[in-house]
Amino acid sequence: MHDGDEGAGPAGRRKDARRNKANLLEAAAAVFVVRGVDAPVREIAARAGVGVGTIYRHFPTRADLIVAVYRHQVDACAEAGPRLLADSPSPHTALERWIDLFVDFLVTKHGLAAVLQPDAGFDALHAYFLDRLVPVCGHLLDAAAGSGEIHADIEPYALMRGVGNLCIGAGNDPRYDARRLAALLVAGLRRAG
View 1: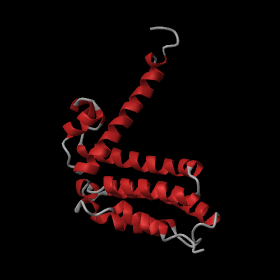
View 2: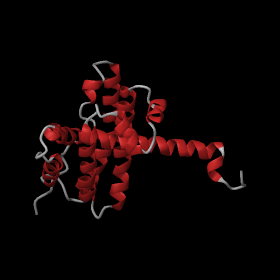
View 3: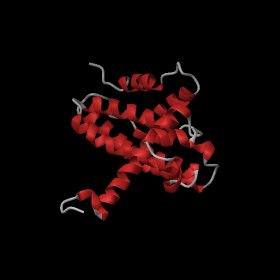
View 4: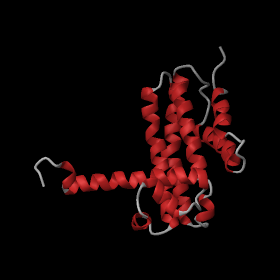
């Protein structure tokens, strides 16, 4: 080992492990969007560039993988809000971009409830979803209202639920474009004038 070899020590290995796990979760999310949550594990492994054993080492069951993807997607969507607000030309543009990410998340999680059978696990995930994402949506709405771009009386949960309802048909009909419909909804929030 050379002095200054950052990846060789325990901290470097932990960082690599976190990066590899995140890469695996991104690959699983991408496969779930296209193939659903019942997609073959070997397809996820191939996309992530790892062996099937690596996936099972991190996620012993399919439900474990799905829950991890769900939480990872929620966290990514939550963390994107402030970044989009800082990097976008306007708060409304940040809101539009965030809603696109939210739609992608909703399409990704399609089928989760069927896999996880009704139990406290799904209730905990739903609470996690609300706790992480409703405040982010609220912050984006407040910024867009504060800049005068949208009406100030829009509730974040109501907007998210409306977008969620628009996403219901996304998995069943390839001609159905949930992103486009959500964009029309967000465009409709604009103040006239």
